[in-house]
Length: 409
Image: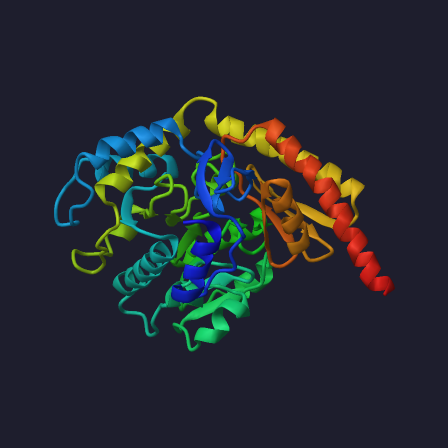
């Protein structure tokens, strides 16, 4: 079926929840995606941070072929060969001890909220008040299920579905004084993204993160790091919180874990994890053989010498080139991020820029209306970054000129 036939079927049968790009994807290789007309796009969106190893990675393809001849699914009432070894690797690299596997990031956030509340109930049963509150940070995004949405800041995501789950409050971004004043004895956990991806690649300060950790440790509340977008190598470290020497009580990961198949994980301290007993939490598909075998291969590749160093190196180069553009184009307000999660905030709406980049053969998205967000595969090379920067120049110039015309008119 061609592009027109597919889009007509979609208009007729799909629930319209996505504002799609006019591309019918049919293949890819490395950092390049191919459409049905043979056009190539350098992908700086990376399937929203999922395609960390790019397209058609030969080792991932080999694992898929091997496991397709074995078992695709068994229930979590039965052992299989890949879940425990994967849990061991995640525990080792996070500095924590126990793992629960789910399917998606929002599902993992839901599980982390449940675990935080049951931990508080079990460890503080005699208190005259109930610990159940979750502190989240303004500008945060944690998912689209009702619990995760309750911890998500932007009104546009929350308002249509209210009333949401009670017990969530928001702390002002990087405001340590507000964090301290918000930390009542009812707080069970603080939920943070070290780098807020959907929020526009906004970084939480070291001072704020360490204050959150200290408050949690002092009051036996839990620090939960949402590393769904910024974790698993995206910053050139296994986890973004490791840049500051933090020791969260729980870490939530998802996007790149299984090379494009749904898999998420809650990683927790042993003492926290023990608050769950058999039957208190579960999932049908989470941690299946195919997903876990793929994730083991992803982890093995990321463990190889030079891989995370490459992310740090090309990420630093990319940020430097964006800073040069900022000096050249005042329409760029600021450049933010670490490794290969970068953002360029504009003075003007970014949709026109992303549209021109798409026509030039580059996939980039805009979040928060004015932030160009870059999430390329970890295998991106400097020459590909140079190609994007070269395409950004005329796109920015064109949009600036368009803005000036509108103001003059």
